Amino acid sequence: MEIGNRIKSLRARAGMSQEDLAGRIYVSRQTISSWENDKTYPDVQSLLLLSEIFDVTVDSLIKEDVMAMTKTIDSDVRTMKQMAWVMVVFLLLMIAAIAWLVVQTVVWDWDLAYAVPTFVLALVLWCVALCAAVQVERIKKSHDLVTYREILSYWYGEPVDRDTEKSRRERLIPVWMKTIRFVGMMVFAAAIGYGFAMLVDRLVG
Image (tube, rainbow, N blue to C red; front, side, top):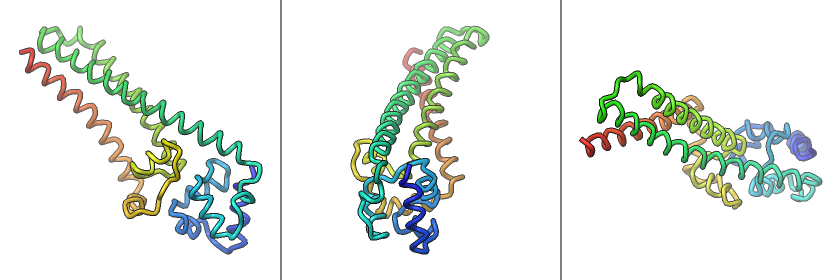
């Protein structure tokens, strides 16, 4: 791949650090590093900004990487869509399993030992949904997608606009805080399942 070396060479010639370039394109320094190491590819908007900053044509930046870039992006979009559906489906199945667990233990008054398989099933379903969510987060990070609008644009193959107030504010949030928020969302999903199960119990009771 040539685009990584090309960006690195042009950046060095311009006397810019990775952070300097990242600030002008509205991405993180890690994203610039990923581009230069050929781990990920710039999106269309980033390529246009790079061409303006370095005063070169987009064609000269991408050269023979067009097919590879398109293939990588298409593959990641396809994977993101698949993992998103897996996450939703398995969360719904987890909610159903928790509801069934409540029916067994509360409505039918089964001994807890007999309900262990259902509990294990709910836990496994939750873990699968969590793994799918982690995969989606990995793709979001590799393409520097932080807001819902950016994710939707990437999802539908549209240019990603990172030059918004919300995008800039979101990129200032520390990684540890984003991690806590992500885990909290998954725990919240499990809590919804438990709440649904309690509702079923009340309706049946």
